[in-house]
Length: 411
Ligand code: SF4
Ligand code: SF4
Image (cartoon, rainbow, N blue to C red; front, top):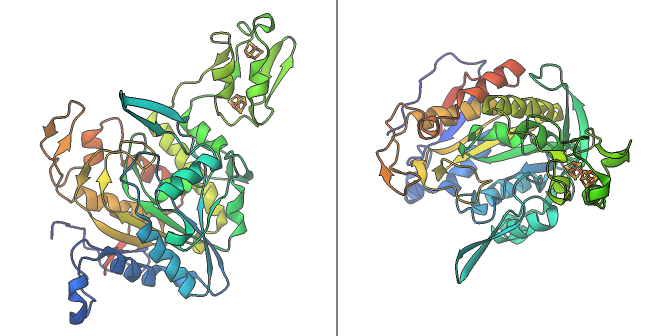
């Protein structure tokens, strides 16, 4: 077995991470050995261990990520169906939940004379739903309806105050989250271009907050009008008309943006005809992006940490996230399925497994196959040096939202 996890003893107080590895299920009876590598069977084994907190009649939100248009590495809905069926078997009522992406605008990209593709579908519920359907996230397949907990535009919020945040004191969490009694967070474990990797923490910190805090994590400043450039004689105040939340008004002969309600959609920057009248902030440093992501996660946990369970599917693990259109090829072989009640421990177990797996040949930007990254080396950083998987854990420990020490329990 290529995975070489740290064996830990006497860890009664440490969170358990249940792990169904890719090739064995020790618990299966002989009659079922032909199912030995079946990941759907393993999913049930993991769920049996972690969904002990769900009771009959509970309304259960099941957080998913349906994947960006043209992405082909997102999590297959078959696995989500297993989660839904298990929740129903306990007499509880599951609903798939998702939030709008900051994402790209819908864009038609001409591949050649005969072929145009369309990307960027996750900014509004109407378009997001279309891509959810295309990727099989519909009730007839998953067994549960899909509900957007931050509304059509991604701005329906509940302000949550936090004590231990590194950058924030309050966060805009998706309002609809609080309509549920319990939460199950389903994550596809993979790389991420800014955060290093995406797992349970990212599902909390980006997947359960509104666009206000998604924007404040990604960008270094608020969007503001440059009073020196804004010129009412050269426009028809297009900025005001373009703002979906009425954040812009004219004061003292130039436009002013109310940053407490602006959620960074960039409509105004695209519609204003005067060059640089509206300042576009630069992207944040990646480490600070991660710290803000974890501050967000800390606010989402106001839902009640004991009411949340996590399952990470470490299959088809590319360098890039499900939120991009081209996630490229896997960087390591499948690592299996992980389940826990601790979002930090489960992600740490996935990263440890990734480090301790052999790398796969990787396609570089020139389309050349590179030598695989060695076993024992963290692959996402090795292939994309501007990220570091330790940042999420450092920030999570500072925020006090979980532990990197865990007991690995092999199923
Ligand atoms: S920001 Fe642009 S569109 Fe808005 S008032 Fe100023 S110049 Fe006109
Ligand atoms: S970016 Fe501009 S259009 Fe979008 S919410 Fe902010 S002020 Fe309104």
